Amino acid sequence: MKTVIIGSNHAGIAAANTLLDNYPGTEVVLIDRNTNLSYLGCGTALWVGRQIDGYEDLFYTNEETFRKKGAKIFMESSVTSIDFNNKIVYFENKAGEKSEESYDKLILATGSKPIIPNIPGKDLEGLHFLKLFQEGQEVDHDMSREDVKTVAVIGAGYIGVEIAEAAKRRGKNVLLFDAMPTSLASYYDPEFTHNMDKNLEENGIELHFGELATEYKGDKRVTQLVTDKGTYDVDMVINAIGFTANSDLGKDHLETFRNGAYLVDNHQKTSDDSVYAVGDCATIYSNALEATTYIALATNAVRSGIVAGHNVGGTELDAIGVQGSNGISIFGYNMVSTGLSVAAAKKAEIDVDYTDFEDLQKPGFIKENAPVKIRIVYEKSSRRIVGAQLASTEDISANIHMFSLAIQEHVTIDKLKLLDIFFLPHFNQPYNYITMAALRAK
Ligand SMILES: Cc1cc2nc3c(=O)[nH]c(=O)nc-3n(C[C@H](O)[C@H](O)[C@H](O)COP(=O)(O)OP(=O)(O)OC[C@H]3O[C@@H](n4cnc5c(N)ncnc54)[C@H](O)[C@@H]3O)c2cc1C
Ligand SMILES: NC(=O)C1=CN([C@@H]2O[C@H](COP(=O)(O)OP(=O)(O)OC[C@H]3O[C@@H](n4cnc5c(N)ncnc54)[C@H](O)[C@@H]3O)[C@@H](O)[C@H]2O)C=CC1
Image (cartoon, rainbow, N blue to C red; front, side, top):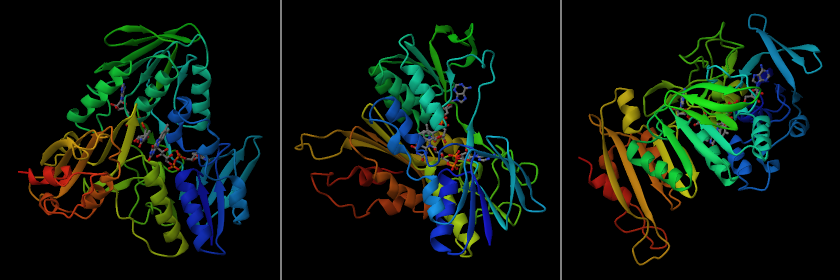
């Protein structure tokens, strides 16, 4: 059996490795238009902000590894069209040479693309996106210019907040804009985002929330950003207002979601029996929403790649849905969340309650210690947990996995009240904040 995989980043790589490592004799062809594969975009801000030495270790595999495993791999080759009826993929390399590959099964792993603000001046120099490794290099290069003193970041989601920190660490004046009234509004409730906003401000980032960019101005290069509230002198702009699915190749043949992502079942199969879709170009099932949705995360890309790999290889494997678990760490302030915030539940018309608690991570007699905030969100009628948020300068990240499992397994808030949680002063308190929050639930 021959499988062609279009896109060899996290999702495509996971599918290819699953097939190559578990199904000897399977023919695998990988095609990608980029020069590199396996770039961990999550490291861009760390590298640009000089928190790590360079970008070299942000790649975890390469072309050669796939060749050694017996796969055919075409890099710098762009798939231009697919004949779904005759099962042929057409592609072109950078020299313009055209090729084709037939398939028995096709895995679409074409990922996502940044949303481009459609406002005047969008072709000026000095405007950036932050998706590809090459875009990270351009941002890094621009930030090295002596004349780039003020950086505007549009979008205070995950990429925007992380790159705003990086720009500040590089000594720039940083202006951070978002249409919403706080940073990270899609992931956390205001009780949490206000702490992050304060953290950003205390570290010298100028916040402009509830403000919409309307124009970039400049002669050849951007010199001003105009919003509905003012005009700002800037030397560089980084746009980070979200991703949308890159589904151009199959959108006329396959069923798609409202944002264009390929609709998939729990085997990652699309509406065409021979075609699978994985990662950011596909939909995903949310256990919190109990519905199909779109969540662009590397973790989802890897898991969906594994599921597709096994199903294509011949072993039935059901995806179990996700919670959209995520985390961020900015100037030492850590936030993690999973499932739905109260705001997200409201938007999805799920009637929820929540319980909050705040306490020190460890007993008061431990010196190295800091407060932790927790919110657990649960559905009013069923009492199942649908979300959790935590924030602290302590490393509270591992707590979120338990809540992810709780949402996946439909655990109620009441089940959490007497949960056996260990205590050791080096780590936590006997009256654990998880227990305390659960006990306070209405
Ligand atoms: C700056 C940044 C930071 C991030 N941080 C995190 C994080 O901390 N945690 C997290 O979970 N997620 C993070 N993400 C999101 C994560 O990177 C994506 O969810 C992940 O890359 C999705 O993987 P994918 O393989 O589905 O798609 P992509 O990474 O988008 O890869 C798609 C591949 O398809 C190829 N392709 C597309 N069209 C064609 C075509 N026509 N022909 C040939 N090849 C094609 C592309 O070249 C690309 O290599 C971050 C993203 C960015 C940009
Ligand atoms: N730590 C992590 O897990 C990370 C995850 N990612 C993922 O990568 C994907 C893309 O990240 P982001 O681009 O940061 O998307 P995002 O969805 O996290 O944030 C986009 C932000 O832009 C704002 N916005 C939208 N339209 C706007 C407009 N016209 N003007 C001003 N603001 C506007 C939104 O309110 C939102 O705050 C996301 O799925 C994200 O979860 C990215 C970086 C790190």
